[in-house]
Length: 342
Ligand SMILES: [Zn+2]
Image (cartoon, rainbow, N blue to C red; front, side):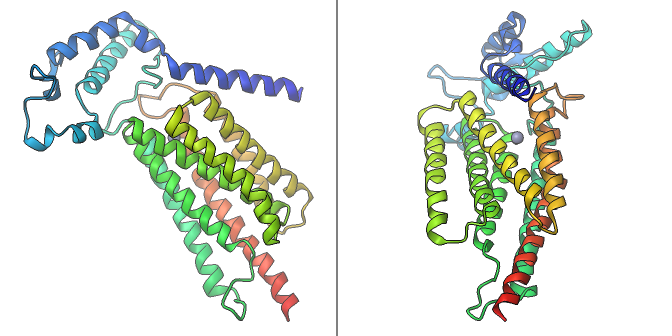
C-alpha cells in the first residue's frame, strides 16, 4: 500500500513538471495569433502599450532616456511581450469562461490577475508573512538564549545548536524574501534566486535535522555529516544556475530532501522523551499534509488564490510552532547542561 502511494506521488509530480514545459493555454491558436498581432500593433482590443513602439533597429523610441536603457528593460521585462501575453491571456480566458471552459495554464502558469503590476499578489503577501514569522521566531530565540538563559563563563550559550539555528533563521528569511520577489515578478533572474535560496534552506535544514535528531555534538562528526550534504547542495545550485534550470530534477531533489528530513524528525519525535515532542509531531504531520497542496495543483480562485499560495499560507502557523519548538529545545538542553556544570 505504501509503495503504491509513492508511485502515485511520483506520477503526480511528473505531471506537474510536464505542465511547466508546455501549457494548453499558449498552444491555443487564438491566443497565439492575439500575441502575434499585439506585438506588431501594440494593442489588445482597446488597450495599447507604450513598450511596443519600436524603431527600425528594435529599440523602443519613446519614453525618457532611462526607460531606453537595455539593462533597465532587461530587469523590468515589463516589455511588449509580457504586456501582450498578459492581456491576450485575460481576453482569451474571458472568452473561454463564457463558453463554460475551465482555466488553463499559460507558459507554465495559471492565469493570475495582477494587482499594481504584481503577478501573484496573494503569494507575495503570504511570503512576506512567512518572512515576518521567521524574523519573530529568530529574534525571540536570540533574546531567550542571550538574555534569559544562563551563559557559560566564556559568555557562550550552553545550548549546542545555537550557531546552526542562527544560520537556519538567516537562510529562511533570505528564502522567503526571494519568494516574495519571484512571485511579484517572474523573470529568469528572480526565478533562479528563488529556487537557489529554497534549495539552500532545504539542504541546510536537512543537515540540521541529522545533527539534532542524532545528537551529533562532536566537531569532527558534524563535519563528516555536513561536508557531503553541503557539497551536494552546492553542486545542485551551481547546476541549476550555470548549466540548466531543470524543473523536473529540482523537484526530485527538493522532494527527496524534504521527505528525508520529515522522516528523520518523525522517527525522532516517536522515540525521544523530549518534553516538546508534540510540537514536532504537529509540524511534521501538517508539513506532510501541506505538501499535498503542491501536488494537487488547482487554478486560482477568482484569479488570486491557487494551491501554491495556500501552501505558502499553511507554513505561517507552522513556522510559529517550529520556532516555539526550537526555543523549548534550547531551554531543555540548557537546563540539563547547566545542572551538569554545577
Ligand atoms: Zn512559491
